[in-house]
Length: 329
Image 1 (cartoon, rainbow, N blue to C red):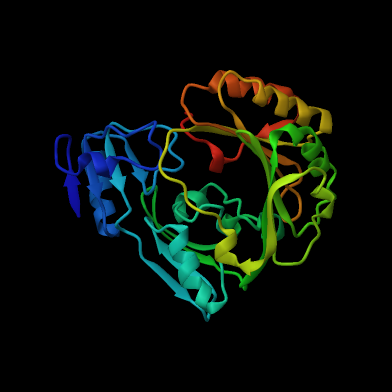
Image 2 (image 1 turned 60 degrees about the vertical axis):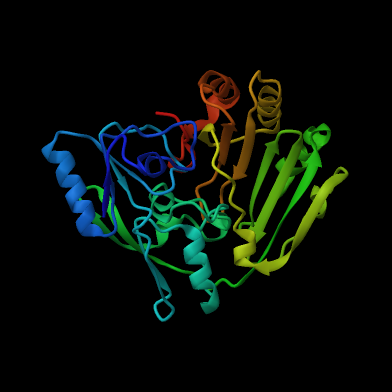
C-alpha cells in the first residue's frame, strides 16, 4: 500500500478520477491493495476524527472529501466460477474485467453501457444494465458482500447465461426530434427489450438490446444518420468508454410520462442556456413500472437549469436513482 499526502509525487494522479470538474482534497490518501489496508485506512480516519470516502474510478462522484480518501483501483481482483456461474470482485474492479473474463464461459454480468465503471459503486446504486428490463437490477444478483465498516471490499454475484444479444442504435438529426420522440413514446415495448431515447447535441439517439429477437421498423419514421442493429457478442453491446471530462447530472423516477410532458421536457432542454443532454428509459418488465429521466451537462453549476426541465414532470416524480447523480450533493 502507498500513502500520499499533499505535495507528494503521485498525490494529484491518485485523487483524480473520471470526473474532472470535481477533485478530492484529502489530507491523506490510502492507495489500498487488500482488505487489511482498508482496515488501516478506516482506523486512521476514526482515530483522527476525519471523514473518509472511497474512490475507484470517480464516475459517480457527488461530493468530495477533505479527510481520508481510500483509493481502491489497485484492489481489482476478479474471479469467475463457471460452475456456480458467479463472479467475485474486489473493491477496485471495473466491468470490463468481468465481461472479458466471463465471456469465454458463455456468461455475462448485468453491467451498464460503460465498461470502465467500477463494479461495486454501480451495483450498490442498483445497477441499470443494458438488459435491465429483461433481467432486473444488478443488485438483485448479489450473493455476498464483504465489508470493513461501511466500506465494501468485495462482492460476489450471479452471472447469466448470455453470449450473444440482439442490440444496436439509431441516430437522427435533431430536426426530426419531435417525430422520433413520438414514435419512441408509442412503442409497445416488449418486456424483454431495454431501450433508451437520448439527445446528444444535434442528434437524437435510440438504443435497444435483448437476448431475444425484436423489431424496430416502427422507429424508422425519419431519415436516420446511421443505424446499426444485429446479433453480436454481449461485450459489443456494453458500450464504449469515454475520456475523463467535466459533467453534472441528475435524474428522476417517474410514475408516468405522457407524450405532451415528454415534448415539454425535450423543448425545455433544447432551449436551455446551457447544453442539456436528456435520456429517457422506459422501465417495466423486470423493473418497477414508470420511466427514468436523466439530464446531464458538460459543465458544473447547472442545478437551476436542470430543475427547470424536471419541473415539467414534477407531478409524476416518485424519487431518483442513485446510479445517475453526478457532481450533486
